[in-house]
Image (cartoon, rainbow, N blue to C red):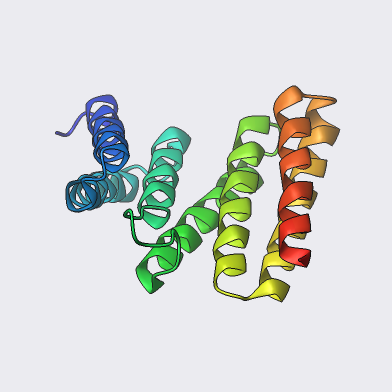
Length: 169
């Protein structure tokens, strides 16, 4: 499709399809849906690089693909999974810088950072996990400065503290 909104909706539908397939442990079908969604969103992003919701959807697709795992696999531990998470993080940082007053962009970035920290923790890379958690905490501190005592920001900060405790064990 050539229409931005139709193509964006297609990318969202593919991510949601991947999410459903993942919940049903149809991992190959989920991977295929995420891969197709990434392809659609990346092509749209190339054509319209200044459309933030398209970039956000591309980040969400990378995040979903990066955290996908099967029953007997740990999440986030494959090189491809880490690469997807790093892509989500890069896009999230770009959007947070371009739209500093949008708290949702910072919350998404902090979520990507926290997920990557969890992957590092599972891989035994505790120093990188701590650094990434601190980066997520700073992201949320900036969000607090913009939005005040926003429930989502405070809740995310509390979760990061729990994550930091896990890393320190």
